[in-house]
Image 1 (cartoon, rainbow, N blue to C red):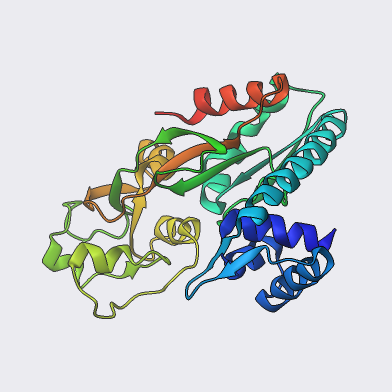
Image 2: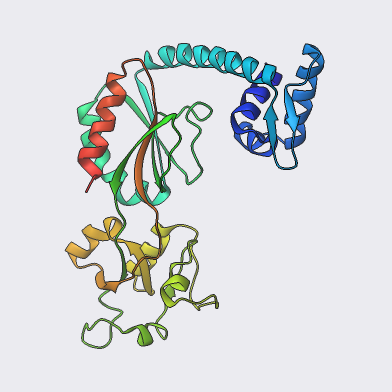
Amino acid sequence: MNALRAFAAAGRRLNFRAASEDLGVSQGAVAQQIRLLEDYLGQALFIRLPRGVALTPRGAVYHAEVKHAFDILLEATDQISDADDSLTISVTPTFATRLLIQSLPSLNALLPDVNIRTIATVAITDFDRDQVDISVRETCPPFSPEHEAQLLFRQDFIMVCSPHLLKNGGRAPTQVSLRSMPLLHDAYGHWQKYFDTEDRLLGPVFNQISLAIDAALAGQGVAIVSRAFVQADLEAGRLIDVGPAGDVSERNYYLVRKKSQRPRPMLDTVWSWCLETFAQ
């Protein structure tokens, strides 16, 4: 089974390294499993190329059948899982803390007998391996033909800070004066893009946008954030919009799930709820 799983992944990605990342094993382990399977069958399944691999004609036929067999097993597993009345949503950490958590009571009221499990991660979701039903990701097209995706909202990036940080009567700072203010950085390097520089800019660096927002709320500096994550803070006066940040990112937030031929009423209900709750 390990050899067949390695073959299915390698045949799908046509790259042993990418297949190893999907399976969570080393590239050498994938290559070894493929060699064992080829020895067992007595013929080559892949043509080794300088960059990646290609299926042999017989390998392509075999891969289609192996994939079909795994699809049958996964569908049978999904049917059993559905009987548990549980559903897993995978979202980014910032989406979880700034939008999803406060909205969960309405979803629980809509589906009181369903156990909703939330996973907060920026890792790309493998729906089968991670047993995820729906994911929310900051990404951009194109999407895999195996997946259904729908835009939740386009990101409108703005600069925000606490009203207590401004010393000039509440007037928005200019680009020049911003360089002298404490800047709050995240892993995306938005300030470097805003100032069009590769130079290191002073200020603390956070690995999550939500932490930069918390620091801005505490009056520690100016952050570049997506308006959707701070709209409630802007309306309550906890943060001030000090101007647009421009096109610092091409990625937007999408709702994604794996396509299926069988009815999934519970999943459809949560999908519709996400669109009604978060789509702009």
